[in-house]
Image (cartoon, rainbow, N blue to C red; front, side):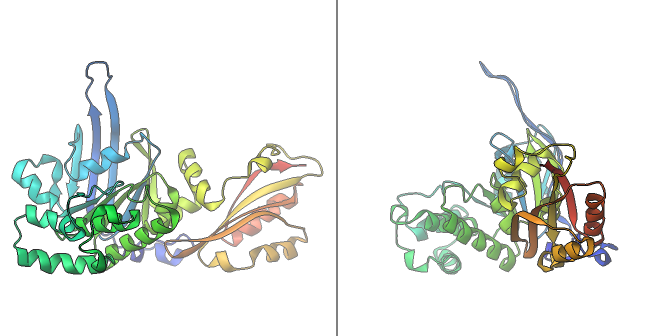
Length: 370
């Protein structure tokens, strides 16, 4: 099931009644991770109080700055780390309790793609993709039948006999994705998988991950420090700060209404929601006689394509000065940011805000300028 089939739309109140919940494929329940003190190094609390669910068949993006705990979080899912407290459950199995053969068996249902590809230089493209199947004891026939279609899926069938040194960064990551899919996992983990790639290659890899998610019905947990990556393909977002989740929700809602300062900072880097420094330096908190009020408006859904500003200008008989504007798409839905200046008097500003609210637009006063 596609996660968008049950997530309420922020601009469609008719969908708010009785949503159908999709079971979580991955869940963290009260998870904490503490690295014990050792000689010369103090105790490190990497994660604390993590409650997080990844709905089956969805893509959840976890974003945070370096040191926020992202890599520790993803390593808990495949059992490379064990929690100090709480439970990590994958496909109904508490992965954090498994050891030995049981853990190795569970890992076959969890694919992993890495930032730096982790390919074996001595093996061909075919050999790298075949490696997990060889470790699992698959026959040569099974390996051929499995690897061939995977190379076609990632667009590398013509590179099967090439070695990693002969490939571009994007091609190496495609090999990494094919290898992660070799054992037919139900969960795919992506740990900064596009951080070493250029923007165009990043776009191609993200499109491939989304295709894999859709066609193979995989649940994807995607770790990144780039909000543009999350915006491109994630259904849901969780924001990590100092080992704790400070905000989480549907991607469109997080972008439209970020609550935590860290989330606002991340969102602003890709939506234009942050003011240019030259304008921010002029802002004052209180109205200025004869000055302008600076308002930020967020458009979602159908309203992103409608001429709402011209309606407000005609209704209130005021001039609107557009300072910045951007239309984008999040999860396939239109999303826009507009920063404008209007007369800052005590009559016009409240009237404009009421008009925007009636149009179901999120608007806020950023400050006042001369």
